[in-house]
Length: 272
Image (spheres, rainbow, N blue to C red):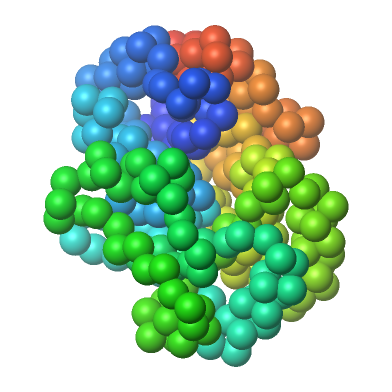
């Protein structure tokens, strides 16, 4: 087997357990991998600065592949920035509004929505943990279309079901045959909408090219639908024990669940 030089790790359901904590075993295994010269990339559907936050909790330098691969930045160099076109954005806004569901629209460092986020929102909580200079700008607006146009470079929308799975499924069908937009879920209660040519695999490929790392030297670990492209793409694709059936079928190997430090077990088996 080829020596692994880059480990790409999803966050929710993978790096984090169900209590939204990183198991100590995961932290120790990642630190040992770093000591061996292996690069660690937080590979998430979340925004770039949140990826940096999760990486900082590991105690080692990490890279970030954000917004399902639509935004990749290495130090001060942007390696990938795939925003939704101005022609697709009005359709996306209209479809989301018609669904009656709550949504965020994200640029790489700005979050926009209609309606109060509330102090209990996970994005608000995470933002409070970031240093002042890294905090996400959060815009609550009454004119969403104008605010999105003024902000520009929107990477994705994330729609929340609030328990209404039927409405989420109906919204997914609206985009089913769209030529340039796609939908994926990163949990059973959300739907993410972004460009059809965006994926975590694309983000990994941009980072690989910059670091001169080959495909067979990459290990990717994930659990949900938005992880499927990177699990299929990586030289070694690892499905969590709690992963969806599709991810398990695409993977080279299945590790333990996120509540059993499955990330640590995979790293120990294949990298240490």
